[in-house]
Image (cartoon, rainbow, N blue to C red; front, side):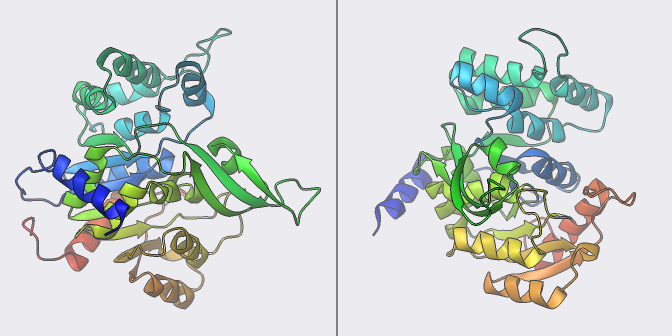
Length: 344
């Protein structure tokens, strides 16, 4: 028995009481990611289940989050804030609070571009000394329709091997440091890793994955928001061990810089190289964004998954997911591919 297996079993025992809620009339869904991609999934998923948990990357080092992280040594709060905003309801209370926590100050001083929600989250971390308790309290204040958890208990540095990061040396591979830099590199990302190399997972995040009916990974920045979850050993072990079905939601278009020129199937190949033992059940893609369906199907099969094509893009032509269409696609997948569950 490996040390990682022993550690995961200890985490399961330690968190057995954290997620032992009775199964209700709807699926337990855990969504992993960060940034706007995770927000798109959460906005859709809260329409079809009230048992929803977001597990959020903590490698951001840019903007307001980066400044707070550097100055106070805290987890970057920005992606956590965005997830909380996405879980706010469509009523007046929810939308008002979503706008408040997303509000950024505009000034010529130190508060310039800081988001209100970032400051609120960090203040509660300092007051309570507990990441999870503080985020739960913010969620309660907002009336969030789900729970938000960080994937790791420590801030992570994302590092990538990039070919051609320096345009004057297009064939050389350099190590690029920092999520903000990786996301905007003009070169070709070969692989990513995190520092520290063996970061601790948040126990509640592990418990949520192990207790889920469905796990949703993506959409989002592939190397800086999606794959980092697979680089936290205990979280990856939970994803491999869980009895939950797993759906991977692909992006609508390659991301300039980070995945420029990537085909849909190449996204799967990259993910498979970073987590070769991880099997999936369904790959969801917008039907208009898949020029070669056979190649995508072959790549999905290598991960154990079937491909579901559905119109999930905004009808106005902007490459963003439409919440209602994405919700309909997830709902259909849960019903068609899920084991017979108590929500049926």
